[in-house]
Length: 455
Image 1 (cartoon, helix red, strand yellow):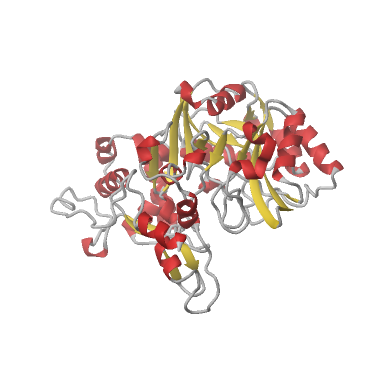
Image 2 (image 1 turned 180 degrees about the vertical axis):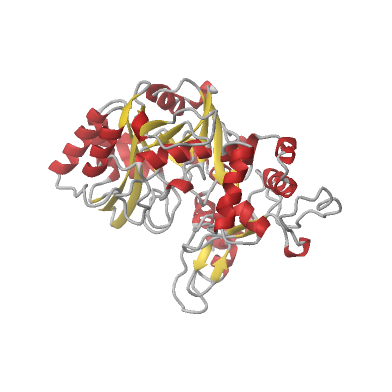
């Protein structure tokens, strides 16, 4: 069975998350997005755990579904009940090799019994796991992995958003230079890595020390509408063990790839200072010795720079298991550009649900629905927008230092309006933006970067 899955999300008990992150709303939005399996998030938090046990019921092995009495009405006639998987993210902050490390990890558990074992082990170590849905603990990531393995041989442990500067295993501010440096003798139990919003698989292919790992992508959603902004594509039976086995053995051909943000939209893609409005590519950062010209402080080194620093290959074709990936712009953002109003406006909400009713779930519209079918729904402007997105004919403005980037599909001179006119794009020249190739991923000179780095 072919389906999409988003494993890394949060609950309303995590800091800076929406109170709308209830099981009811997650079930509803999974249908809207076209997800079959979602992580339930934050399983270490006692109040969230109680709510899950009250509202979910067992489905296939290791998976759960929302009880009928809690399901919200929806308008997608072919929607299947989404499945929930027990997952959580834990933040480990600790000192190792003379440096403070801040690493986020995602844990997958096969059942509530395993979840309780992990909880009790952390409580015995005086870890404060109930103050925040994503708890902060002073435990080495290697030791956290050991606790999880002791709870069940069936757990799955994935370093989260591995390049993010502040909180990740390879981040520029507090990370390591390899997975082995972090997890030591237990590194063999790490099978997959989460690329994060600011990188995509092709960027990770630059590093051959990552070749043995499956690259997965998830939304890290802090509100229900952010589900599936990144996701994974499977073709296998829907059960916990089967999904985990596929991620452990990607050569089975049951893992079909990932759905990605354009990484330039991620808020840590490039280097810079948000307050000083300084945004640099890695070469510019080296030329300026990493010092902001306005405030004279060090800039925040982003994901692209860190990938380049650790990279050891230029020919990406040498990377084995180069699974397909599909770069997508959230449908609301596309509609916002077409109509020229804010993403959160009532107009965009109305048009967003209008698209869903006419065509189907969001992921289908963005990636798989034939353009002719979208056109038949009377949405010519949207057809051209999606065609450009699928062809990667986009204009990029890179994110940096906590500021999300911008991905545009039309340049101002095109005077796009939301008039579904057959002739609107008849004589249109392509947007003229940076056309992003899946292999030509760098818009700076990597050789120049390496020469400067070696000085």
